[in-house]
Image (cartoon, rainbow, N blue to C red; front, side, top):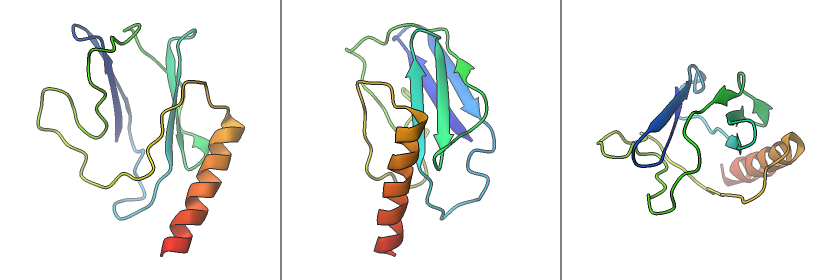
Length: 114
């Protein structure tokens, strides 16, 4: 499952997408998440396609004094059991078209490296 946990140090909005990694282990996945602050939703994309419905979160702005953690749950020993490569953060909202382009570029690089 893919999990997203957003918090401000006091309250947290845990979200999850069951079956996200259903193809199993030892697979390459392109994962993108778009946070829409005006709608209060997170939309995730798997290999260039939207996965499930956008999910609502209840915690507002995230304080910058708290660290960003990818692949680890804060305050715990739960770590992502895999590899991450080419992680990017954007200050603008990515469109579905741009996410599909990023997926195609990443897939091409991944296939070339095999």
